[in-house]
Length: 252
Ligand SMILES: NC(=O)c1ccc[n+]([C@@H]2O[C@H](COP(=O)([O-])OP(=O)(O)OC[C@H]3O[C@@H](n4cnc5c(N)ncnc54)[C@H](OP(=O)(O)O)[C@@H]3O)[C@@H](O)[C@H]2O)c1
Image (tube, rainbow, N blue to C red; front, side, top):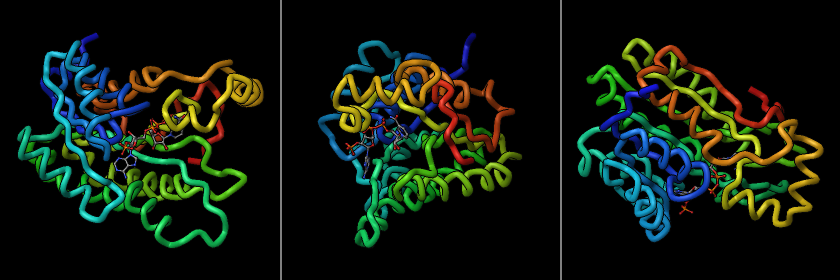
């Protein structure tokens, strides 16, 4: 099946590692020009080199801190300056942040910026271009375990972004723009490796929670994102879809 992603421009935040990298790699293999964003320029450059080896379009790298005020607008501006347009935004940047009671406001503010405020600024800066071209795809990588046993700022901010995205999908649907959220279960990545450092940790978790019997690979999730990014995905809008091997612990 041709996903018709040839020459589409896709920003992937967090595109240097893990799930974001897996998504960027697949979109590039399908012909898209990918813009990789994250804080570490060297990590982004390595990722871009790997993708370039098998893609038709050279990836673009934009180092940016998306937990700092202005990061989203900066990324939008730099992408338009370098590439001229954006068809797809994949918001995959994020860190899991357990917060004990009394955690400093600075941590909450950074989580709010990274998962919500700068995502909104990025989207709102690019929506006029998408509306004009009557095509746009916005895909958030959320979570799949929102109600945890301890407060996690990532889950709280994912909830805010999901509700925003559902409403936004209704507002912009008439312009050929869709807004969806994909919830990873346990997908192998930098973050996951530090959360489950040993094979025994992983096996114990999988036995208790994952009917599929193993952790997912970034590509397991990227295939869904590629469909959502494609013109073929035009009738899937305002959804939250889990890719979790059947774990099914998500709240939305
Ligand atoms: N893997 C899972 O099983 C799982 C489960 C539930 C939810 N998720 C969510 O899926 C998303 C991707 O995570 P992952 O598992 O692929 O982990 P990952 O490999 O650690 O990726 C996170 C990415 O976000 C970027 N990032 C973090 N803070 C940033 C900032 N302030 N500004 C710009 N970029 C920033 C990181 O790059 P820099 O450090 O270079 O900035 C990194 O590339 C995250 O939102 C995560 O919470 C993952």
